[in-house]
Image 1 (cartoon, rainbow, N blue to C red):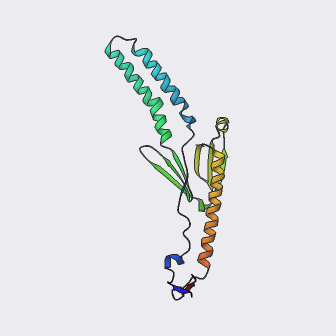
Image 2: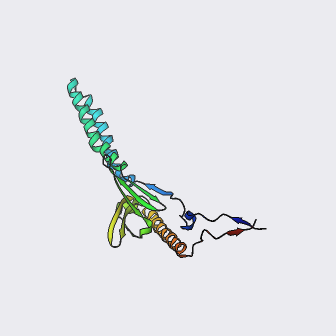
Image 3: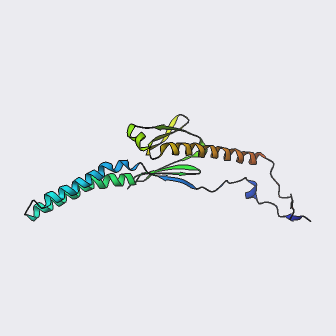
Length: 191
């Protein structure tokens, strides 16, 4: 014999919330950007090893050490931290771009807004499989993801995520337009 079930709550009547937000990809610009800073670090270390032993005075050795540390800061550490400070996070609901080391800048774009993704590549980017993704909403460029690794794969994933967000939004609209179950209705279920 079927038994009565308590009426649905108002939260269940408002429609499905959809699946929880999950991170699809966490990306940084292609590591190719660290090639010249790495070459600079090797040259600085070699230069310090060569010039540090050339001088007998301690003040001259200290100046060589100071110059090596300054060059390391300018030509290796600053570019490395600039590369580390840029991050692209793609979730099932949005794209998040974070930039900046001391002053953070964060941009977000929901997949449900609908956008166009354009891929542009230079010769080095094509060889490495990276590229620049320009994301345009209603003719206005909103985001530029620069030097993204595996750019074609990311472009296809963004199209799929945008399509899934649009279909979920359509399903939510259909649920909202359907007649809602009132609190007086008793739902009967079987065992």
